[in-house]
Image (cartoon, rainbow, N blue to C red; front, side, top):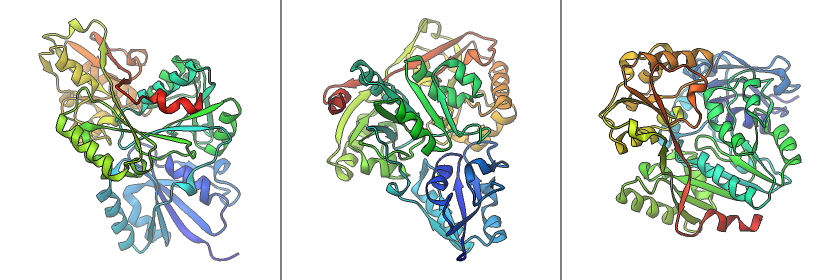
Length: 438
């Protein structure tokens, strides 16, 4: 056997595993010595198991902390490092490249075509240029249109395998009971539960080759529900990409969001109702400059709060979607917009009352200010979230997560939910671009 190229894959429990499965698992030209992990807490210190890593890796592959990157390159005489995670600035990627090159290794980023699976069913992908643009409500809206036309759809979600990787190889969610059976985190429930409630079956996991075989066996159309700003793992027949005028300019300065923008067939400008007019103009200009062939659809995500009159004059604790605030870098969300709209007297800052892993999250992401991210990557962190909420001296909690968080934690004060769905403005519409699939 010829000498194998010693390789390290940098990831965050998603794209890294998929790239390995696609190009490295059974490839005798490469030897993957380890993965590194970042972005998500407590996902290092595991192994990519032999059940998934194949015959070339009978003992599996260790997953190390990215903080040890340079040491790992030198320790294992790594020749090539593959960058395989998302929602980071272009400058960040090149800083990592410089670090890797200085340590003596090549730095690689794999292409979309080489890492995308071909389905036997039509694939409609919903991706984005940043976390928090509104992929989820856009995917739900597309699913609703297709269901009304009598199409049998299956949603395939970008991976979030933060537990037992072998057990999470291929997961199917058709009921809320399935969420309990698979020991889902808050982040997983936020993505899967709304689809299930609306009548869609959801697949997710680790091995998207296996997932594709099973999903396409029960669907007329596959609907890819993207994560972060990653590209689709399935080759799309229609690529819908959501952009955010609240972060105008990010669509051309983040990886791999700009790849999505360049390859989009349809671009949805979301949050038109709350964005600044100059930012909307800037975003339209960037779209016209880099992808003038794309169909542009304008939309809003109006907020709805039952019993909103309770907010006026109250001191409120606002809970927002976790990833949108953290690596999505948003400084506000639907919850804070609801607090402002309905006249809250004060946003109570949870930082002085945060405990353990929630306190660590605030230290890592200081830009979040007086908002609480709904972090729940495991039982311990859910308990930390509960304690932080109950420690915070607010009159009322405003929760803008996609699930009813009160099902998971006991809150010692009144709590109102903020809901939001995609609402298109003018024409063309998503129904117009989906007509060929009816």
